[in-house]
Image (tube, rainbow, N blue to C red; front, side, top):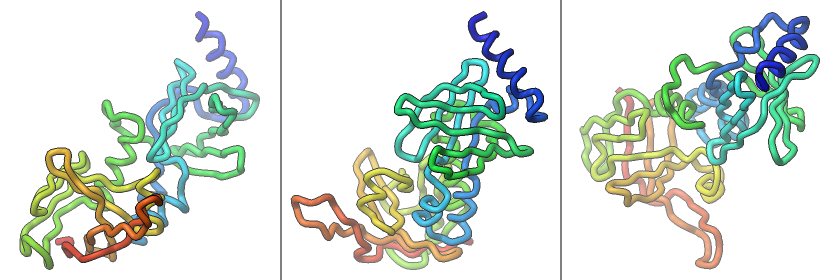
Length: 241
């Protein structure tokens, strides 16, 4: 009963302001604009910077819960309604206004930054941020690639949306750098983590249309400084079939 009253009140407050029902906000929402921009431009870092900082929302009206991920950190907050829109409030005082525009979720931060999200049809049991990552992997690295230069030349390579990679000599797992320390160390470069049996290393990547170059990551910082990764020797050139 404690939850029924706030929900009823929220529905009443919003009934004259929008055609959507409160439960229409439920679900996992991902930043499709960032994914489209990454595929179109080839520059993952630029796309994420321009269309961030939030890449995924999870909303649960019944439990008044709102969570978001920026690709590195996650935040859990409380979902409530005022006279004109829903509001997600967090412990650090941060708030986000939430509204539905057709089938899209529109968010507005305190800074005025606006973002658009689309609902994931079947999120399954993916952790917060996992649905965006899966969609990004499918769009940015999905399909079949072929090694046209480097060890294993002629071999077909596949990057799965679950982080597995087959065909590259050595590694069997990968992860794209989305945010956090790896993004800071890479600067404007896009980077990829490759590993096998939990042992791996970062690589710098450059994508141009259907061509993907993978370079060794060279640290140009001093021993007592935070690493600064730059492209070293080129390891592979992949071409999408």
